[in-house]
Image (cartoon, rainbow, N blue to C red; front, side, top):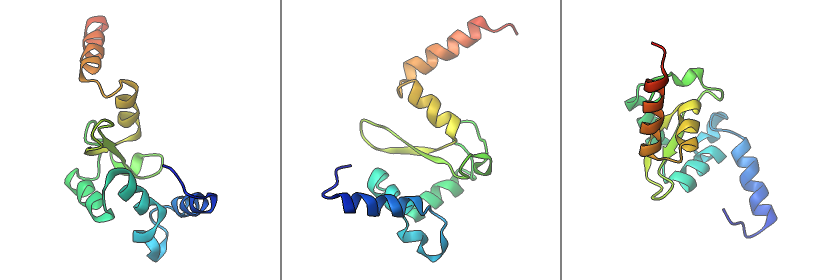
Length: 118
């Protein structure tokens, strides 16, 4: 993000650090602003996605309460910025490490099958 002034950047950072669940300012929190600016999502849309996924990771099914920060990450395509779903920290990082490439993920899965002792 580009900031027009240091004060604007500091204000955003203060609001973002306030977190999503800080009292009545929830919908105006920095986290809500982050959702809107980064992914084009409202808090209500995020909540609807959580409920649709039964409050768990879309890939592995791990519940959100088991996450380090108690919430799921918004997964999105870096080329189109289209939101794909909500993921646990491990799955979100894994997809990032494999550069959002289905071919690399299939190659990794094949490698695990070939080298498995079971």
